[in-house]
Length: 139
Image (cartoon, rainbow, N blue to C red):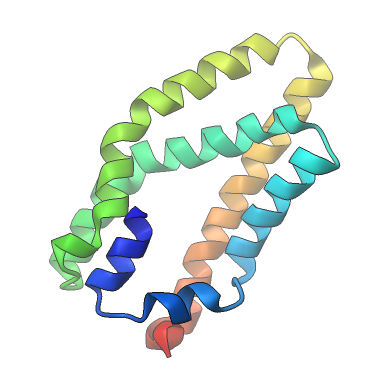
């Protein structure tokens, strides 16, 4: 809901944006989660959780501040980033503790590690997708 409120705060048509097809980065994240949950090893989803929470903790607040300061994005449109930057630390610690529990099982840990690395790659693609679209993302 935070993301939806942020889109609305930018003055964009939320319904139009959410009804479109996802770009490669979003598609990669969604399909990876689907694969691990339905076809692969559901424990690997811990890698997705770890990467997502770690990025929020490491960069969320800084990116929100950068958007507000350098790109005149209104503060009311950076809620998603600010909240994840401040609240994900507990989620990150919980994910790390759970991953440690599986660390002794080589196969489980290998899947968690792979999912983590791929999730970082897909997040990088998300940013590339936004840069490639420029101002066309809302058209």
